[in-house]
Image 1 (cartoon, each protein chain N blue to C red):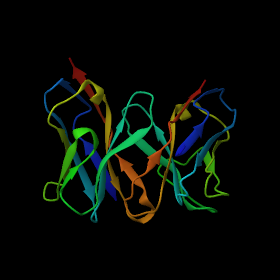
Image 2 (tube, one colour):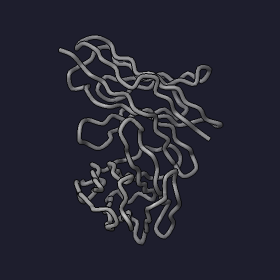
Image 3 (cartoon, rainbow over the protein chains, first blue to last red):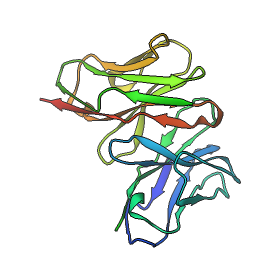
Image 4 (cartoon, each protein chain N blue to C red):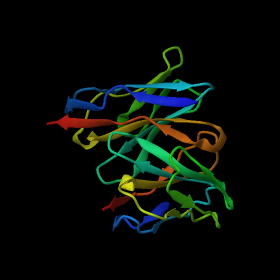
Length: 113
Length: 113
């Protein structure tokens, strides 16, 4: 049982480049999330989705885009990378929106130089 | 609106002594509360959760937390620390609709031999 799988684990980008962080879950969860973790700041929600075809902004959506064409996949797109996007990114999923446990991927460490 | 404050950014304990990690929350409704642990370079793992059942919640690895509504607190404790408890711990509150998780800033635990 793979759970939540994120790729890549590490990436270095130059300013202005674009990339997609991949996230896939095999638990048939409706809810999926993208968080970023900055040192000493906890995790902040970037975008979330309550089902295929439905996405919404979280606390810090600027500079990112998402799509949810299937239940399993929830990619995060950075169009014009900036140094402020240097962070660790976590994808998570949960069954429903009533305080159930969220399952997290291993994270993607992104550095923008 | 909801928020979470972890009162200590770092906690240092000796192996075999008790651990106390303090968390206060703010929520305009009955919250679901969680503690997650993050070991170095790993994803987040659920330790325990409170969802309006028993106020004393037991989790994995000997951890427990007590929900105190009058104090808006959800402190995490363990009677005897082990070296493997060295990690970062996050207190989290969940908003029921959309299950958006709000994270505290984290408490890094150091366990001394």
